[in-house]
Length: 380
Image 1 (cartoon, rainbow, N blue to C red):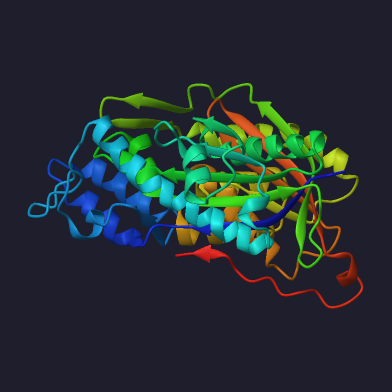
Image 2: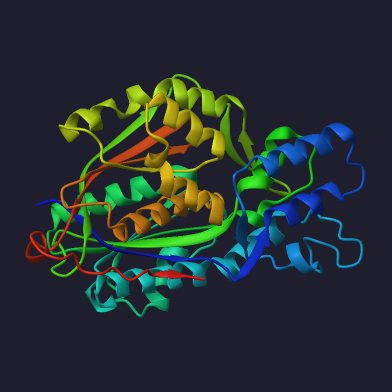
């Protein structure tokens, strides 16, 4: 019996930052030479991002360890200070997204038997999995797993874990939650890779309820298979390490080219398993150029990645949480029909391609009649 995503909830912090305003903040920093200014302008203006959310309102107002209130200089706090913000802010995002997912799925918190969390932008223990049990008043005997430091691709391994739990125990109800506080690792740099990271990453969380019992009232996503592949190159092109002043992202210009060259082979097993054309795509928007290369490599029509591009435009790259924002939109999309094949792909350090094949499912009674309305669960 396959597992189903019954509902997805999302959450973002309240501070909304305008992309041109953040660009201008970086351009106003001292010692920005002409070359760096051109790199900043290009990275921000060509990002295809309009706005992002952050737990750091000081990026707008100034006045903290991150941005000086008077000079508007971006500071460089130590990793411990940055992680303190993660430990303070992440639990509420996880909990808000989880509550929205439970409401969307019409599942009471008391029914949850397992919790699977994923995050790569901070650490604390007891961690997000533990806090969800406490914050949602779950049964203390709920089994917990946390996937750490898998980067932007972590949502699919988390869903794979949930699917396998449901296969082993058909009565299981699994809460999957991904949350990232990327903006705490912001820094001034003349390194093109770091400039790109500062231009695209954002904060957010998303959660999904996974069960072997499909919903009787709403559209679901049936989990039909998973894939993972390490590309022949990319180990040094996408990396995520802990430095003395925050976590340091390496994201070279080779990443889109590697994805464009190798993603077809990586996804071939799931495409073959689908037994027909893919009807909808949920592709992690690591950046505009990654989506462009993916679209070309897979010979897709521009509309195929509309949800990925919309999430990138409105929210930026929220690392592991981002692809669940895309799937949440698909649950509300009237153009996604019963039986449609949905293929998800996300890219993590290594360079690793994680993928999932899904099928959209309507409730049995709605397959020949009107489709029930799906209420958005995004919290802002």
